[in-house]
Length: 244
Image (cartoon, rainbow, N blue to C red):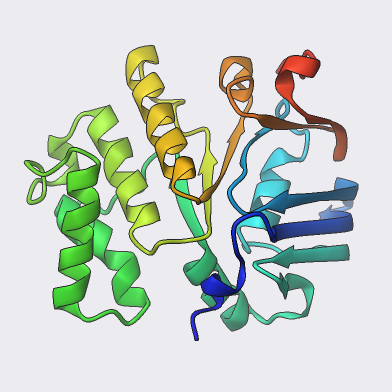
């Protein structure tokens, strides 16, 4: 059975309790996270805010099943990531989280359609079904006339929409976006954020990691992090946030 269906709308899809992450770089000991605790319900729209070095990237890696805590509990989709091996983490990541990055990471030698089909191939979806689903989501993103173009033939906004299509084609519980408008002009960035709002309205949890106060203020819930600790968590209208 597909584990994604075990988490229903309004149930907890992300749980962190007392999460600490420590790194040793040469002779330097770094505490990237210091006792972080919070929960996210399925269907929430959240921004994670903080300046460079605050720990937000490490927190993103925990949510994205790219890393495990040194101490504490991290549950993604009801699964405890600390007890998982790399293969199990990769499976959970592929089934549960869709990633969108500032730099797009579209494979330059593949068409837009082939790029979007790629995650489905990793899931074992047959090519015919994968093509159908990829075409469907690309049409939804307004890219129906760009299916067979290479990424180099797209504008920045089109590349980001293709990246969002790739992230959503697997129908993940969680969309995790890292500075998704950082390389875009303001108008294109606004349209991309509207896409995330639409995706969220369909029941997907959306988490945007950013240092941009304007983006952070648009989500109903903002988690502000500083020096590896949660500083504020709630409606961004209730507090000023952290300036990068």
